[in-house]
Image (cartoon, rainbow, N blue to C red; front, side, top):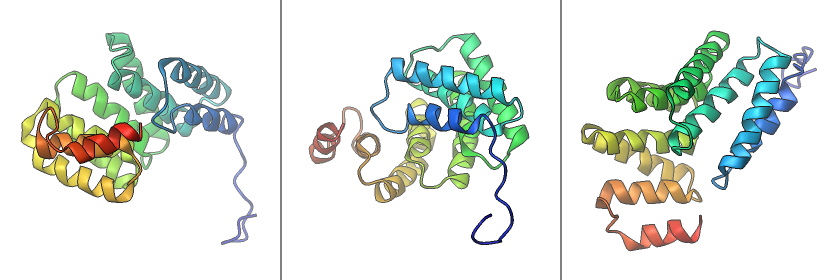
Length: 194
C-alpha cells in the first residue's frame, strides 16, 4: 500500500530491478564505455523481460544517447536504434525525460539543431534537476551558436541545482569564457572534481 493514498502499490515489473541496475552504470560522471556496455546489456534484458516497460525502453534510449554523446558509437544503426527505443518509451510514458534526451542527441548528430534543442528543453521541463539533460542543452550551443544565451541560462541554473557536477561547471565556463575556457577557477574546480 502507498502511504499517501492507502491504495495497493503498483505491481513491480520483472524489468524494474534490471532497469535500476542499468541506470546505476551511468548514474555518475565516472561511467566508462565498458560500464555502459554492461548497462546496455541489462537494459536489453529488461526490455526482453517486459516489452511494455516504458522505463526499460527509456533506459535503452538514454544509454544509446550516451554512446552518441561520448562518440563511442555514432553509427547510423546506433542512431536508428536509439530513436526507436525513445519512440517506444514515449509511447509508454510521454512524461519521461530520458527518451527526449535521447532523441535530442540523435537529432544533434543529424544537425537538426532546432529539433534537438526542443527535445532537450522538453526533457528539462520534465526533469529540471537532471544535470545530464542541462549539459546536453549546452552541447546545442557548441554546435550552433544561436543557442548560446539560452544554454548559458540553463547551465547557470544547473550549477545552482547541481553544484557538485564538474561537467556543469566546465560547460558553464566554456559558455561564458569561450573555448578554451578563460575562467581558470571554474575549470580548475571542474578538473579537481572529475
